[in-house]
Amino acid sequence: MSELFAMASTAKSRSQKTALKQLKTKTVIAGAAAELFSTRGYLATSIDDIAEAARISKGKVYYYFKSKAEILHFVCSKYVQLDLENLEESLKQKQDTLEKIRYIINHHISHYTTHTFAAKTLIKEAYSLPQKYLKQVKAMERQYFEITANVISQFPGVNERKEIVTTLTFTLYGMMNWVYSWYDPKGRVKPNELSDLIFRIFTSGIRYGMLK
Image (cartoon, rainbow, N blue to C red; front, top):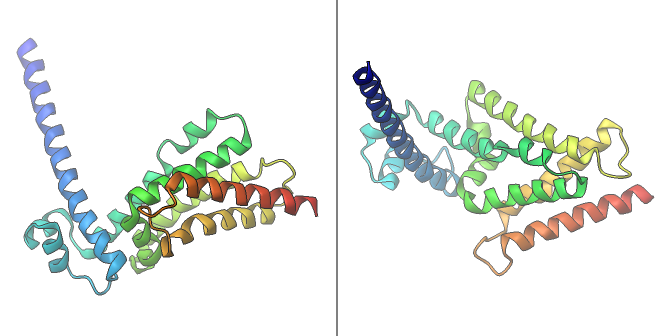
């Protein structure tokens, strides 16, 4: 019996190693594709271009992805998953609404600055996805939006009207997402400084707006 358990454990270990190796290769392909999609454009990028950038054969790209659309879907969905990862659990550990808003902003900007090409691909190229893939990505984005909107609705003085909360949430996303067009993470303004500026401008703006 112990030999059977040992054999099962060894098989499981091998399976896990294979899965990790495959995920690593898919991530390399997706990373190369994201850089091309975000700089050259999705339509102007071919599988040949992706294979060359990833330094693997075209056949290997097709082994892991059936099409260029599948690669785009992988890039976009994995990026939104990164935004959602442990977000609700982390927010539950914070009592103060301001602290929660600060966390969301830091979380968002941190992901952007460490996965810039994927973030730009999501923002600029997601609508190139076939409808079945686009719906999946949009459903994940709605989940992220609802988590953020729920936090903003708890801000002191915020009108509980749904349209006000929705407007404020889109405003915050506009501030965080638009940095893709100008912000250089390697520049003089560091990501934590950018996060703090967005936090102070956004929360101060709400306070001012609610007083009028």
